Amino acid sequence: MLDLRTADWHRLERMLGEAEARAGGYRLERWIGAAPPELHDDLVLMMEGMNDAPQSDDVDDMKWDTSRIAASEALDSEFAQLTYSMLARRDSDGAPAGYTRVYVDLAQPDGWGRQADTVVLREHRGHRLGMVLKVSNLLWFREMEPDVERIITWNATSNAHMLAINEAMGFELIDEWNAWQLEV
Image (cartoon, rainbow, N blue to C red; front, side, top):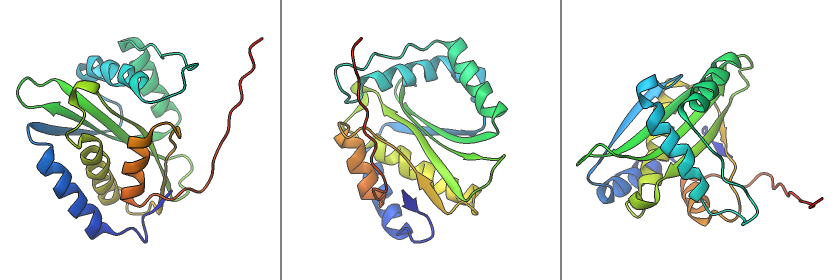
């Protein structure tokens, strides 16, 4: 959890500047709410890229296509989830490279925002794009949603890279969930 009331915003801006210096050759696109249909193919790549995140061997890959993206976007709207999303693209060819989003529950404004998906595709890793995406989106989100006091996120303990980004940003562990699986 990141408490936005006590977050070190100057430190976050410095971290963003340092990360951007290593992320040359990429640009960010952002939107509020449902992604326009022309981005659905890019979002399929991003969501399929989540399968490449460190996870246990017994987790099945999720399959995505544009109809599933459209359905997911419609559910966000139906359940009054307002999303703030960013997509990183490589300048040279426009290839989508990374994605992140944060959302608020408009039906139940409780002072909490939720950090959802963040992914950097394998061929684009090593440029600090995860940090650029998450911090840029957080700064924009804070500007747009000043009443939100906290952001909660969740990660698999096997995803050391994303956990390191979250810790550097000031997220603190508030809960740990365990899952068990039994083959039948």
